[in-house]
Image 1: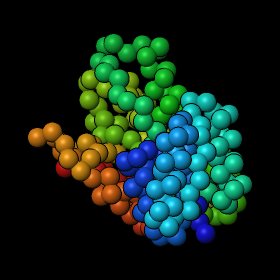
Image 2: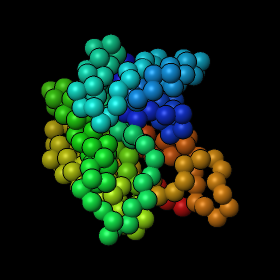
Image 3: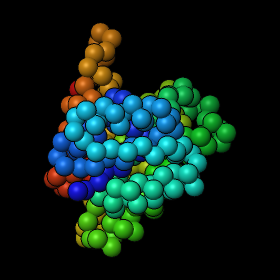
Amino acid sequence: MPTIAIVGAGPALGLSIAKLFGAHGFEVALISRNKDKLDTLVAQLAEAGITAAAFPADVSDRPALTAALEQAAARLGAIDVLEYSPYSGLEMVSPQEVTVDNLQPEIEHLLYGAVTATQTVLPAMLEAGSGTLLFTTGGGAINPYPMLATTNMAQAALRNWVHNLHNTLADKGVHAATVAINLFIGATAPEGVPHAAPDDIAQHYWDLYTRRDRPERLVTA
């Protein structure tokens, strides 16, 4: 059975992606900081008949993230799909307020974690001649929002790198792409706020996996 590793797995989008890929025959490795929350997700997936396992790790702890992915591969088999979407909240920082100190956590979380995860699973993908790398960003990675300067900077760097991966890995059988979510994730939202249910957003990840025809999908109203 193929395996998807979801880094940053949570009870909304991460669970929806896990359910969708699991319904298509994937085993699921769930990686995030909180073991108790991961165990709850594993139980929910088991109720749906999906094989899943939890591998706690903080994406900012590079050795721990590497170890979690290696443990997932040892237990479930080589990672066929990596989905990277950790979320630690939004820091309101204007462009003129950006400093090295307030930018560094976003770079560690969004960019360095993604690089670490990719370098852990990519060698096996290249050896197999197949694989998919999917990374979640926001609309601000494309058109920045002034109040989210540090997040947008880190996501834009991630987007640039993933597009480079897309261009250089395609002929090696590995597809790399980003999903830029430019709306609120939820079945409901405050009046006037664009939103979409996690299950609907998850479909974009499946489409990228199956079609393998583009480096980016923008999810917007």
